[in-house]
Image (cartoon, rainbow, N blue to C red; front, side, top):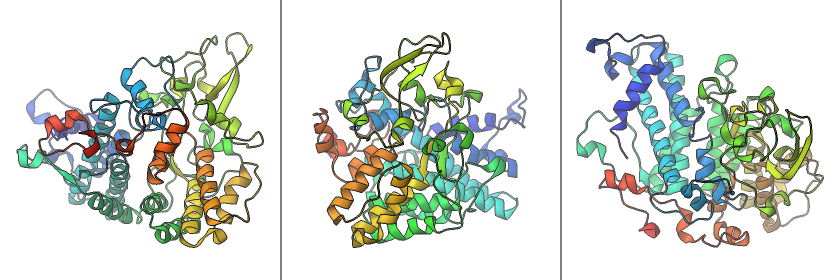
Length: 477
């Protein structure tokens, strides 16, 4: 990990605080001692973590990068003919190497945001400010750090566990070895447990920030990933029965509409605006059909695998929200039809430039918590107490309720329901990994390069070159 980036991050953070103007003299430069003095500084510090981890409109973590580094590796999508980046094409067929630029960028984006979280967690407690707001901001930073390390440990296994601001450029400080998986998970759980103290609801100008319900929901997912079934069931039930007001939208399309963002089903989402200061959601551009007048076709393209659209029955209400097969040109008014394209983040208000989509990307939502509960209960005690949760999700989709299944059949039903409900929400790859079905699932759709080594990403070679204490994952050596 290149910890020298701290200096760069601090300069960016100083620039981020628009209320402070710099004069052209050395005394005007912000240092960490000068910056972390006021409530406004503390808020700006935590906002910089959100912007680094979630809410940035460029090729950042939840705006195409995790899609390129995770989603197109799965059995749902493949790189299309318009993809010119060789590294993207190689990821899609699991033929990537330790120097793949998207894998490298995904690693760097996580650690850049973690660096910002560490500084906030160390510095904000020292600021003389309202203690309630101070504690809230620290716990928001812990929530984000916990989420980031949860991603890292699932993608790479053992990773450097850096928990404090680095203030020295000494090699002993900036060269960090990998920590055991169990140590990383312990920290993830500690951070999310602290973040459970966050307010149950954030409204108004704070809508979209981390809440106690978001911390509990991600924590339930951590326990599910670790196969701690009783803990996963108990924690998800706290969310279901808690004081958060979560519920399913009656209309599945409302989960993704810009007009209903941060609504009752949205527990935590990456926030996007219609390209305000580069804050647009670029995911829709990948699905833009070619050759339709008035619609700017993107230079990249991740088409669905033929089997993906066919997973949905004709009466599943999610199918025509998840995909579209026709569109009216804004230029000539003609109807154009095409093979199924991914639709969830394509916004009609920005049809002439899909990269300006204002639609949010769910990180976790109430439907997934219901499915976490159903899966955990089934694994712990069988399906008897799990039907109500999964059937709530199926009812909204217009599907018949499940009943009379044994534990194995119910398990497969939950796996399928997760795939249908959460399509292209960055869940499929993680599900294939945690359930140990990655190789067979990918081979079934023709991605025959998939092998044991792909259960983990390779450590970026660039990071190993910079950090002599960092070792490559075994099967990638």
